[in-house]
Length: 349
Length: 179
Image (cartoon, rainbow over all chains, first blue to last red; front, side):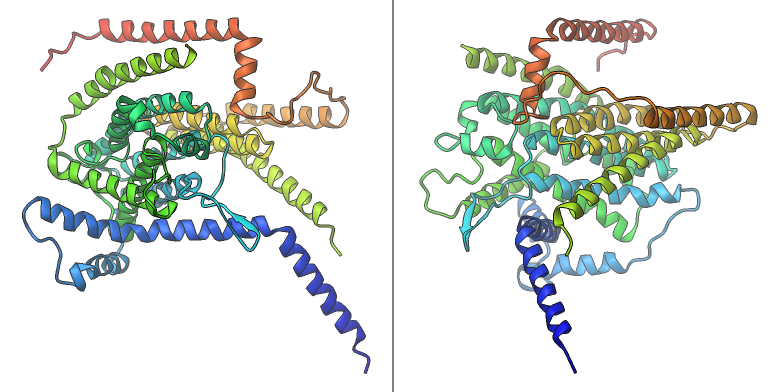
């Protein structure tokens, strides 16, 4: 029997595989990075819930969850399993399609926004340059704003489709609040853009090699952080889900995993916002003389900012809705414009 | 063996075509859907498809701006208004208008087909800097050198419109007492 054609075919196949692998190495590396980032970002959520509950416990002079596993670390797992197996109830008056769509939009946009966040300096492995970011988009910061802006739709759609007054009011509040504070967010980031002259997040980190921008732009940092807290709907700006007024706001009617997906979106947004503040103002992965890995420096800064988020939640009472709007439009926005004017003038001179 | 370059060219064309067809279908949905919420959603998906098309043609900045301005800011206001007024389904009464609309659409499509097959397409004149193509810098340079007057005029018109809205809204209500 002549098996020549088989070996030839196998050879050809092998050649084709090797060829396509070497040709598509960028694609493969990109896909692996995308999967790693998505999985990491999603698995950070239970840890963050644990951190928040433990820290909140300490802030309020109580213990927090400490029964399940060491330091109560099994608690988020238990919660996740419970939420996964809960019955999903949809009331008959709801718009089914939008009701299902809303949590998906929230989680999707939250994860995608993380794609352009650079979390470490590039290094070389096997002659291949590995860059620790999902994608180097030229207008990276605009991309983050665009995608996180799309995240509002999740909340508005949840409010609209639930057919519940409280949900609707929560959705309305969230859209109004996020539109108002997005302006402050963008304008305070603009002063950093003026300083670096680039929209790429990587260029911004590289521009802060000697001095982090928080020392040059303290006001912009403060404004950005406040607007960031408002954008992520965290206390004291958690008007869309104010428990005392709106039951639970836009996610009143949600149960089980769909309810958990809103929380996932919120916590991922928190991580993204902390990462963004780190990149724009705290110097990203630069460690300023402290001998640690760049990625550790970045993670440490993000963790610190996350703790600040939780700290704010346990410190400040919720701000009233009309005051929230007044604060956004009459205090933060003029300050932003003033800061921008000064920064631009200095840059030109 | 396959030529990989042709394979990728083919996938790229397929993606572009798919996105384009989705955009057209979404815009049809805007017209034909009876529920205002879904109309707004179709419009949003149309905007996103347009942004994707920009992205596929390497116009990164335009794509992002398209999403921020149209899909992000304008459409959220649309949804806001729909939520405020209550998005009731409109009843479609007369089918005459509907058939006219369909006729118009098909006429347009026929026109498009004719112009695609018969009419010559013109080359774009002027030079394109391939290095800066699609970046914020290229658009900024263009906008603030050649079109500066039009740009500033547009900003003035927008400002007038904003002031006008505030005037109209403010004087038709009794001012709220500051708490």
